[in-house]
Length: 291
Image (cartoon, rainbow, N blue to C red; front, side, top):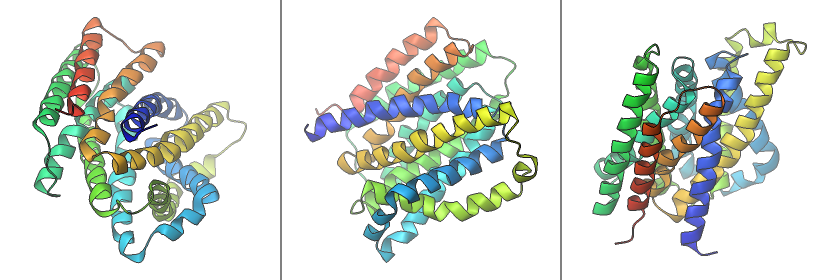
């Protein structure tokens, strides 16, 4: 398989996994608070990665750890809590749509802060994707007038964190393996996540006989291992073999999967959202167009 085929394979896999993450987060929030979901997700992922990929940490040099910390905060810690809070007030499918702003932030920050160049077709593709996203947001607000869309700002902040993360990995950690980066990230986050969790009532109210809680924990474990640990490793690899703009364009595909799961879970879906999805797909194609 050549590099071009690998890029698209990783992009499709990530869209399927991360597109399913929003409904998993929604289900986990039935028996857990947003802070508990954010903290437990990091703890479970850290335990999983350190148990299977601890030797990869040897590939991280001392000079890299500063940016390992930065990417851990920007790409995982801060967005992890912000998204959990947002999903308690906005449908999971709409949250995933708002996250589609990530490629736009990636391009802007990459050009202004990190000195990355971009092609005109990538800019056109991102603008087309933004048009599709805007239609989805407006249509989602019309279908769900009782939801508090002020929480959309949390998603915007989280998306900026994802954009910073992608650019930092490409510029400062391109010589570190994808697995080492994600394992290093969660090594850094393990203790802070435990401290945050200790300030909730999780340890005092935990009860294995609580069916709702245990079911939520099952969803959270799946979300942590597959949707965070494995998916972030694939994403870091994608950033290495492509560029931050193409890698972040996965955010345009995620809503298509998330809306499907949301529809199965009783969230409203319209034909306008389907048409918007087609526009988004065309935007992704433009982002990766060679000429």
